[in-house]
Image 1: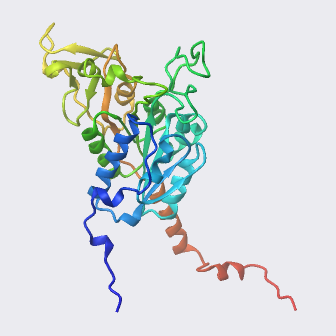
Image 2 (image 1 turned 120 degrees about the horizontal axis):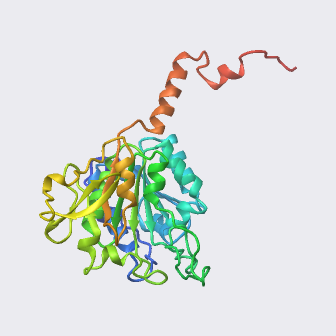
Image 3 (image 1 turned 180 degrees about the vertical axis):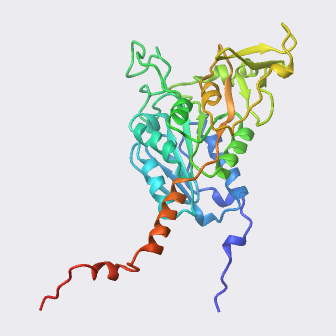
Length: 343
C-alpha cells in the first residue's frame, strides 16, 4: 500500500522555498536581499507550501516567481495586480504575493496599483523601488527624482516623481510600509506583519540598482547618514531617531518637525507616538511624505487599519444569493423561464 505523506503537518524551512533556478540579478543588486527575506518569512507563517502563489509583471523584480519554489505566474507588464486579485477571489485560502517594480506598478500598472489599494483584497504586494527602469537599461521611471539624467532624460527629468505611500493612502489603502534592502532583519519583520494583515498590504522596498541608479537611496541607507535620515517606526513608541535616539518628530501647527530632545525645552513627552491603526489618514500621509534632508524617511509599518477584505465581501454576497436563489444548479437556470423542445 502506498504511503501518503501529510505535507501540511511538516515543518517547513527556508530551503523548502529555494528554487533550483540560477538567480540572474546583477551582483550587488538589492533584490538578492529581498529574496532572502521572503525565503526567511514563508516558513514562519504556518501556511502549507502548496498554498503560496507568487505573481509578477515585467521587470528585474518580476523574475521573482522563478526564484521561489512555489506556484507562480509571470504576467504581463503592469497587470500583476489584476492577476493577483483574480487568484485571491477564486481561491481565498491562498497566500498571494505580488512582486512589482516602480515602473511596473506606477507607470503602465498605475491604474491597477491604486485600485488594488482601494479594493483591499488580502494580497501581499512587494514593490521594489529603485527609481529607474533597470531591466530595459536605465530609462527614468515614475519615481525617478526630478532633474535626474538618464537615457530617456539626458537633460534631466522635468516631471515630479510619485511617492508610493502617498498614492496608497490617497487611494484609501489600509496598509502601507516602507523598508530598505540593507536591513534584512527589519525587512523580514515587516514582511511577516504584512502577511498577517488581513487586506492589501503594500510594502515599498527602497532597493538599490547598482548599474543604472547606484546609491540613489544613499542618504537613507549609507552608514554615514542613516542615523539622521531613518525614522524606524514602532507602534505605541515615540518617533525617535538620530544617534542615541536624541532626535524626534513633533507636530508644529499643521506640519511635522524634527527636534532634539533636551534642547529648547523639548522633552520626550512632546514627541509624537506612532499609531498605525488610526483610520485617519492625516498623520500617515505626512509620515509617508517625509524625506531627507529636511526630515528622516519613515521606515517600518506606517499604516495598518483593519477593515473587511474584497474577497470576504464577494463571497458573503455569493453565499447570500445561494441561500435565496431558486436556482441550485446550472440545470435549474437553463430550464427556467420560457423553454421549448426541438424535435
